[in-house]
Length: 349
Image 1: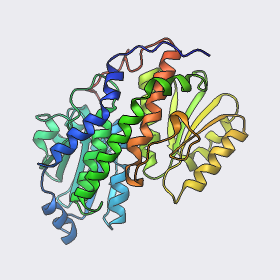
Image 2 (image 1 turned 180 degrees about the vertical axis):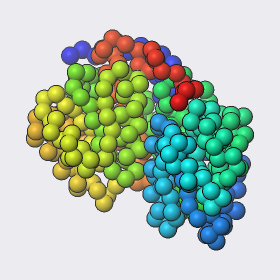
Image 3 (image 1 turned 90 degrees about the vertical axis):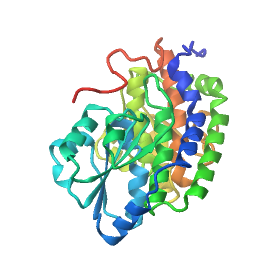
Image 4 (image 1 turned 60 degrees about the vertical axis):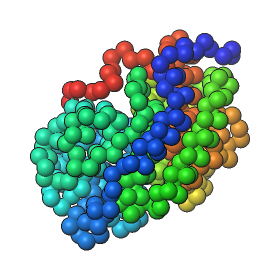
């Protein structure tokens, strides 16, 4: 089919600004808060556990940090903020560090968390909005520098991923920050190269995608950030139904849907699960669905990822999904990322 017409609106502008948003965020980290005191309190047992919370893509971005914290022998749990404030308030004690990520710093659940916590747990906020309720209430604030964003989370999401690497390093769970910052810089440059070919990527995807098919995004480990965020932004940006989940969860029910009405993106992920994910991708294709392998070893085109260390895979894994949103929206005759009902900041629970 011919390449559909693409409306070059604010969402596309934000997509192309992602490498610059990462670079700007790295610059803010040069004067970022010193987290050694918090790391010392964790090591000494004065802080006994870490609760990672947020909503939407801000929550999904936290998967890599949780993996690093658990590997560093820290007790770390992820709880959606809406659940934390109503059903799991028991986490909010003086022995808890709450890491709350929110691009606006002002969503309804985050504001309620601040009120509910009332200074009980120590609060570390990661936000793109200085002066927001989260920024003001946090004991420690880490600022991203993505700048204003029109609608769908994209540049603020990758900037949050970068900032969470800073948090992980500061808490002693993700290695040396200067080295990691250098790796993030290289990834941002590779992202810029990928995005420079956006027209080509979207044109190719328009020939293989189908808006009428159910779309699934499957991943494991750090790539779960990508799968869950992909499902969210596909719905927001295109109006198409989509779902993100772990690859093994797909076998527990959704596997029964496989056939001509399904298309699935399988993220290759880290070395320890790559073989399992490859098998899943092959089985999806064998069942008559369209299966797309997304990794540095993909055959080519939009699903071939720029090179990135395993810890930073989510930064590049989201790129093909974003190209998919442009293609799927255009195929439906709509502008990608234009909201009809949603708002950038969710003010109601």
